[in-house]
Length: 218
Image (cartoon, rainbow, N blue to C red; front, side):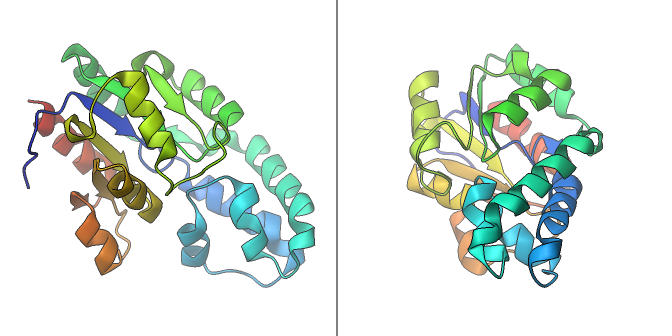
């Protein structure tokens, strides 16, 4: 599947796209809700990701009033086990190639600003990106396209010359709402037919996504 215009900007999601944080995220959420209700299937938890924890946590609890306590448990678990998060193989290489080719780079993530900044700095990702919009920067959250629209304004690019790369359904829906082609990393999960149809292209892994991105920029 080809692009109709030259790609001059690439926007990435963070978790599951540039850094492999899913095992920690799922363990942290499972730990958080353990005292407050039944065990939730992993895929149910995964399906709710894409926004700040304050948004999805109540739906995983028997009583939404337990949300503050669950969030505290999740944040403590995440903080004590942050060493589990690692960039996917090939991230540094692809970002360096994109920068060398003059491609404008941004991040649109549902992760909060504090931990996003820490992760990017800790893993040496910060210098590559001109702008980052986090889950607590704006009142709206994915799939609302406001965050992606803000990035386009900051980068000074049009939707047609931008490619967005993410791994969640809300990434595709947000990209579509902003008229930005979205490359979906499915991580071997089954993707709903409607989401697959709306994505520009679907790949199995981050490494495959990086190859597609580089092919798009020439």
